[in-house]
Image (tube, rainbow, N blue to C red; front, side):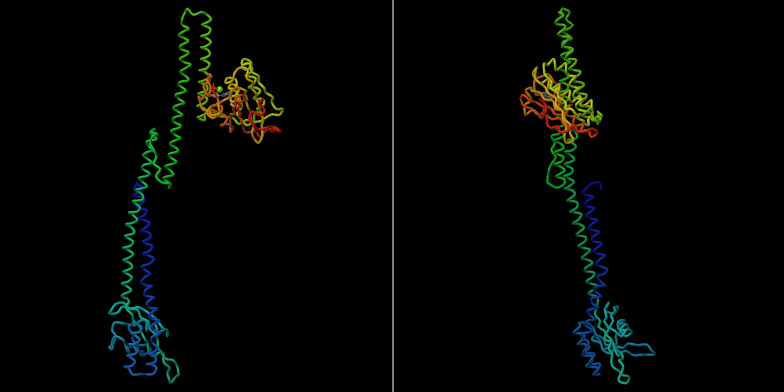
Length: 488
Ligand SMILES: Nc1ncnc2c1ncn2[C@@H]1O[C@H](COP(=O)(O)OP(=O)(O)OP(=O)(O)O)[C@@H](O)[C@H]1O
Ligand SMILES: [Mg+2]
């Protein structure tokens, strides 16, 4: 019962069985009584229609021979047995006797004519069923009145009874019952077979999906989910194909990340080892030794930054960094970071242009992490441009957003690479960066419900950090939204 095919077959079987029982219960028990009813009504209607001549014969007191003839005529017309019963009153009780009968001239022993008794009691036409020597019959009785000359009253003189056999009704009912049972059994068989076939085909398709899913789960991304139709299972298969593609991409990205990260880490470590070996040489003059030491410091610093960045990136990815949503003034924040960079800017012989607006620009962000993003943007403007390249910082806010843009007049990023520079380890120039800065910055910006975007053309490259404006403070009046607009 754990297989879909068996369960569906059983379900089909139960539904068909239920439908069959409902049909049987609704049709068969009522069928016999409806047919008998119908037969009795038709018999009563015929009795009314065909009895006129018999009535006239009785009223005119015609001879018995004529009466018999008319009774037989009525029987022929009504296609029923017709019996004329006389009423004899004995000690207050009405007794019936056969006056004439379309079948037999003798007394009829097997029938009690309950319909006639009812008709006598009610004075109206009546019907009933009873069992006689020839099986069950239905009877329609018609009371016949005559006018008593002495008292001038209408007196019930006789009853005309029409009798029709019910054997064919029985036969019809059992025929219908048998047909229902046979048809039901065939329907049951068909339902079970259909249920089983449908379920087996569904089961096979699900089985194929399951098989491929297990291979993919085991890391085999070459397995293909079969998209065999556009029904629910087909759509599930194409959703699985999409999922598989994304998983494969993620897997490739993860492998590439690990490979690049270990490569990036290995390079400075090898370099350190090399310099240490060189430093062991006792004949080294002071100047060379100092140069090697500087290299050692440089490599150690690079290694330190790289490991911190890698750790940062993995923690942001894993959601392990808790970010505050404080209201902080971007003006003060940018001023602070710009001050940190003064020595580097001087060394780079660049000019930093920063004209903060007179009003605060409140943004909802984590202050320390926003500083980190601005540091990455300014660091790039210094690292990826020639010495002496002017740099500008602009700040503004509008429409519920606050932004800070760093623009430089350097060579910029080729248009085709603009979207890729945010990928980890991606570098578009030959400078010594490890390509993690912008990846970290963008992740951080997004975690603060902000964005980090780049626009670049030779001579003007702008990175813009947009953050949700803080509601606690007044927004800047007339501020212009757009990267680099203020960045002269
Ligand atoms: N202002 C800029 N001008 C030109 N190119 C830039 C600028 N900022 C970034 N880039 C390009 O984008 C790439 C990625 O920058 P990102 O800050 O992520 O890495 P990086 O600076 O190379 O290394 P690090 O991890 O040390 O920051 C850089 O290698 C550089 O090619
Ligand atoms: Mg950088």
